[in-house]
Image 1 (cartoon, rainbow, N blue to C red):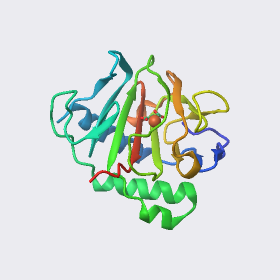
Image 2: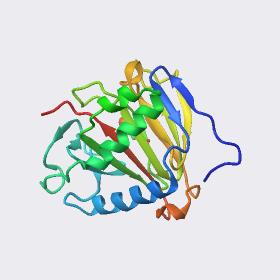
Image 3: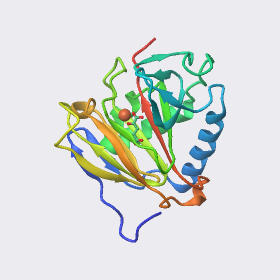
Length: 218
Ligand SMILES: O=C(O)CCC(=O)C(=O)O
Ligand SMILES: [Fe+2]
């Protein structure tokens, strides 16, 4: 929900930009509707299984390429073997607009060609530990869009999971981009703030996050 006083843009690290209230309400609703459809299949949204037997508390469904720890494939071999839904053109357009706005660089926007999206759903207990997005074979920026409950997004350094890091609140409609020197920075979601989302988005509870990436895979 929009605050009376707009939240300022911040740059927690070089190449990392937080743009509050970037996605208009109607597009948040459209994104929720699309995520709801993707969550049903061809590969259903699921708690990702980790190699050591654990499961992630977040539920994830992928577009374009399927991600499982720690690789991308065209088929969801750890779910139902299905081929993931295609990465839609409109989502690429959204990513180009996002990047151009975040960096104030129309050229960077035009050149951006994401080919995968990870759609994450957080219920009130879900969290994501500090990690790097490093299974891509390209160093193009990651574009992240959030809808629903606000979360604490921890954006760290490229060396380790610890300090220095910056905690940023990502609210519904916020954009976060990390590229350049921050592309391989550790980041995570220590918690969400249940009840902070506006049900008018179509999401009665929880948080959706969509990250767009360039896999560099052919
Ligand atoms: O939920 C978020 O804001 C971050 C998600 C994330 O880091 C990931 O999917 O790799
Ligand atoms: Fe990540």
